[in-house]
Image (cartoon, rainbow, N blue to C red; front, side, top):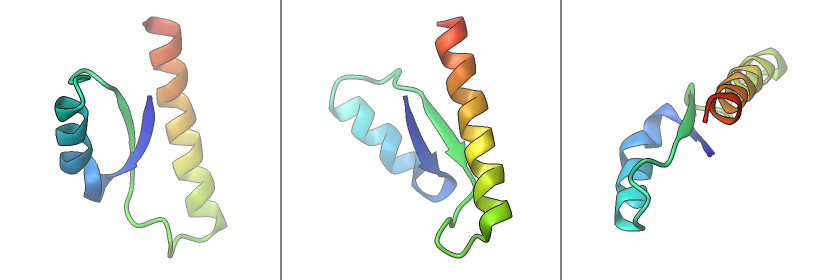
Length: 59
């Protein structure tokens, strides 16, 4: 499981396929993060944590 910003999803999916793990799962968060304030970063982190928990508990 990885965390990826929305701007890099296509590249990440391609890399996963090339490396032989086409079903690799990503928590996709809003891009960019560099200019996000603390509230924006917290929101993105909570979203990523929820996706991670879902993957771990369901898989």
